[in-house]
Length: 188
Image 1 (cartoon, rainbow, N blue to C red):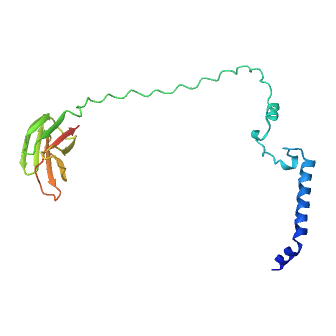
Image 2: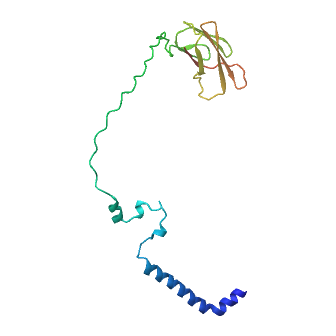
Image 3: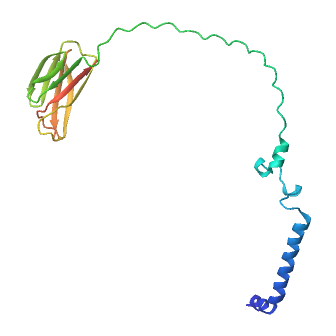
């Protein structure tokens, strides 16, 4: 409340003081420093970049290109790396696609390569014999094409009997065996 009363009584004097001080500062800035100038005191080492300088100042900093210097001496030859011994060639393997079957749900082979025997041993149980030893191979069974075209939830499991027979077992979503067509590939 006291400040408001003071300003109310002296507002004309305060207004005149404001104009006097701002005019003095404006005059000192224009009379003492030329336009767009910066004094030594305003510059901190490393604060000016090339973009801060005028085009004339940047041109003055560049000199003429000097003559090309002489080529230096060639460096020493590096040591030759050691060559490893040739490895022993491995035995040729079977083609990955040589052994496969496509089997209908009733146990009928529709396509095969290398299969000598295909039987339906029971509900959801199939046995496929091949003409070669498959002991060190991998067996991959996937769902086949049954009529109806609907997607069903069922599982296929593979196992091996002897040296050349693959067993395929198929179970529904309740783990009950049931008959479906499938594809089997043997990778060696």
